[in-house]
Amino acid sequence: MSVAPSNRFQGGKAFGMLKARQERRLAEINREFLCDQKYSDEEDLPEKLSAFKEKYMEFDLNNEGEIDLMSLKRMMEKLGVPKTHLEIRKMISEVTGGVSHTISYRDFVNMMLGKRSAVLKLVMMFEGKAKESSPQPGGPPPERDIASLP
Image (cartoon, rainbow, N blue to C red; front, side, top):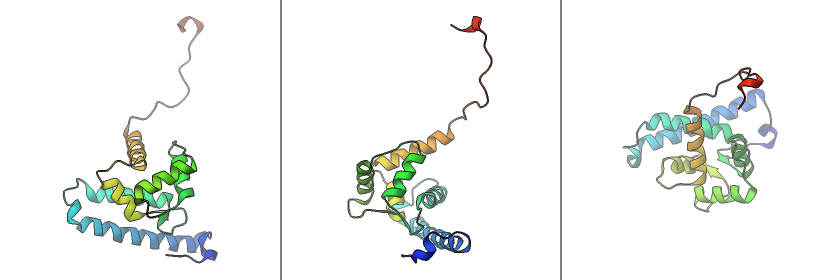
């Protein structure tokens, strides 16, 4: 789906309409996965699909329903795993089977629910586990004197 260039970078109402349209489109795709017998035995499928939709929308920077090379590059940097353009292209190829230069939401969900291990899937799973782990203690370190040092 193409968006008029004049609306692509606008904020406010136009941006809200784009986001709402994208959310409806992704929710419709999620319903297709929920009805698909192939995934009927998947544990917590509605919750997983909801989380996938949120994560996908966060990184679909142009709101056109696909994650391109630059969006994926920013995503990896934000997750603390920066990659080169060549590595990003390889990741996209892994997810799409080499048939596209962008990752559609269907490709993304298939990757996350699939048995095959893709680099992007591993990174996403790692990020989820990192958020679940106990938070690091905050604040300044405790004061120490010279005698307590090893």
